Length: 239
Image (tube, rainbow, N blue to C red; front, side, top):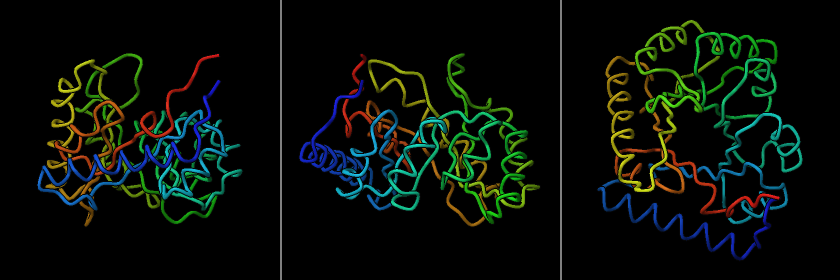
């Protein structure tokens, strides 16, 4: 069961998250305009998502293609920029190409090749993707090992319709959010190394990292995309 949040509360929470992003960016001598807020709407109903859009949200994140299949058409395919931030199974690749503007969770050469084929079949000229890097090596989380990232980068050069825009990570959870800093720093260093090799073309190389618990630390370490759900929509209440 999801606890429904009222529009005024939702707007207040959004304003608070934006203020914190701005404050953190300025403290790090960065422009707040460098940072994209993706409001993670997984498990939350379409009516609440529409309220978030009305409050100014432009980017929304979903974890599962199956949930997005009903929610995105109800909210509006072009009502926002939709990000797939959860693990993508190859048998859901076609629907993902149809539904999402950006995929954060590319984690294999085979998936890249399948997504590229789906773009051909669906006449989609370009699909921005990010490589999900598993830095914490947790069995419950997806992502490619850091040592295998270059293999995917090279494979993407053969994919005519996929555009590598950056890297994503989902580090381990710590009660003390400061403990996650080394993971964010490592992703930034990997991005910088790939950037020096021209992996992102003329793009800066996005860093999709940081959630409700730790997004301010992620910003301090260079995040360009933060994925915030609970601080905006509230906790999902178990039935």
